[in-house]
Image (cartoon, rainbow, N blue to C red; front, side, top):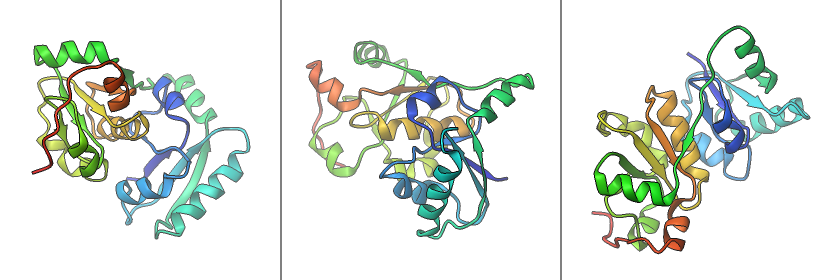
Length: 199
């Protein structure tokens, strides 16, 4: 029943992680997203990079204690993933998708696109056919997402969508894709943009 938070870089998490873990990188937004996504009534453990792992874990635990998440159970170094595999267990990965591929899949209706940005970002412009579910409330609406096609998560430039992908995977979704280039890549490609505000 504990929550495991993998604090590594999203690229490392995407390449391989223990199933069921959440990816919230230990950066300037760590406390913000942890405060929105972690339960306050259960212990949590951190997965940190091996180099200076104890110091990183202490830094993360201090940051979370400041917002009331004080049930730190301990931490694991990245070697835990190697041990997981050594014991014959399967790891999990996050699949990426590019703008051109996403454009085709949206045109064919073969994916559900979820924009996890803020209301103001959405209103300023978003991908046609996207569904708006801000990252902080994504976990509360998992049952609203159709189960008959892959879910693509997207933000402005990939940081929040990486977290969103881990939320979906930890909840048991297997068909999750991360549009890491996000709205910025879509704009650079010159693809269509909608501008209807949040209703």
